[in-house]
Length: 391
Image 1 (cartoon, helix red, strand yellow):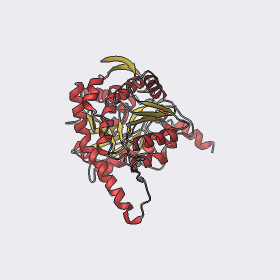
Image 2: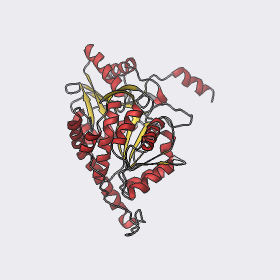
Image 3: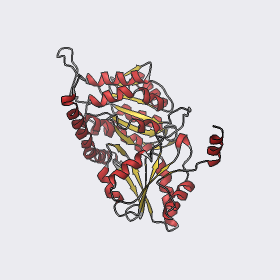
Image 4: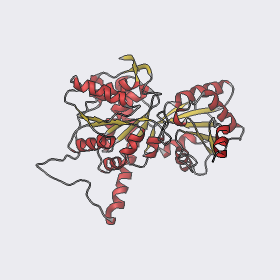
């Protein structure tokens, strides 16, 4: 049923339809509306047997999810920004134990300085924690990714982050076609855990592993994570057939089949990028867009195929670790040895708008061969010089 609804409310409704057994969370903007809505639904008896656990911190939220999942419960939580960092130790534990927890990350910048607005600094910082990371393109996509995330997590026994741009999507009110309970039930079977902690049959999990086997543990985790790339498009297609709409799974290609230049981005900025591509195409520019949905595990073969024959590739970076030429760009470069030049463009940090005009300026500069390997979109050089002179 299509409703005019806030993104957070839409995600909460679909998560509830996935019938989690345990929902645990600690409020932090901009994800709070999601767990508030879930708390209200649990109190009202929907979903039926779910428990909502109030905790004292984000670390506790994921720790409760780990305990619940290890005892055979379908577990869900949500967080953002510093809250995700507070979970860091537990993130690695959840992945290492192979627990199929689903967590919504309402992407938000990391301080200091304090910034509550959107970029991808939080989830990108945890890219190596062993979690699958999926990035929503819009609120419809965000809602549709959650049932797919639960099914994927439970099939490959790995936790999944559904990353959703904070405020830009979580607080935006727009039409979303919400899946009916029967549709979600048809796609997502009851949780059948692979491992269950049972007091009547005690076992140890997460025990010490020495040098003689730790490499093999990590190798097997790597192999298992790669399986997600095979299953994800199949599951998304199955869900799409039930709900009657496309659900992008690995990438979302737009006017790129015959494009000379390719622009890669993640998250809601892909919508603005598509508008910019339309305008540039109208002006005769030969450019296409590629929305990257599955960032972890990284789809090297898909990117390699998408970039084949291009003159150059531009990657919009929504996070920028100091001293790096771009995190996502580095992945793209490693996928294209001997391939086209790859330009990392840092854009939209701390919630700065990424406009069609700015995107067109960057793409036009690349066409002229004037775009460096790393650049910062809309950089206020006057402010930079003032800060330099003050130190």
